Image 1 (cartoon, rainbow, N blue to C red):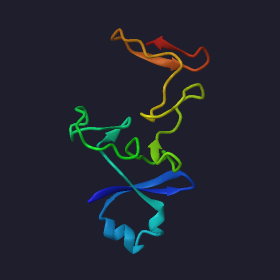
Image 2: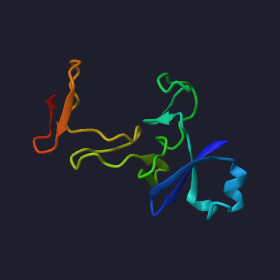
Image 3: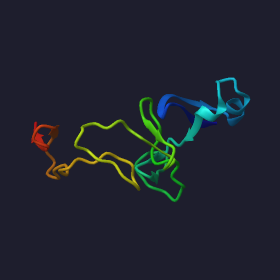
Image 4: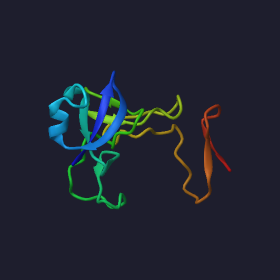
Amino acid sequence: MSHFAKVENGIVTQVLVVEQDVINSGLLGNPNQWIQTSYNTKGGVHYTPDGITPDSGVALRGNYAGVGYTYDANNDVFYAPQPYPSWTISAPNWIWTPPTPYPTDEKIYSWDETTKIWIEK
């Protein structure tokens, strides 16, 4: 069985684990709306089932699709909704990036969109 995302107007509305034959049969609606996604793909990298260790597997469509994600047909990738207006996204990882990198000092921060900086909690 595989994971498939139902895409309507470029947005993922449903994700199911189902056989390809079921998708092809039309039982779930238009087969062209269902696009395979990989539970083991994130940030353009394929991971082992633990989700931590990259492996030599082929990354499928940038990221595992989630409800509300965008499917970019031109680049054949899924990506999450934009968290803040100032954040940008690009290949090859298709993950939103803040204009200021997250601090690396072990403290916990939250993003402040007004100042576009990380604020210590």
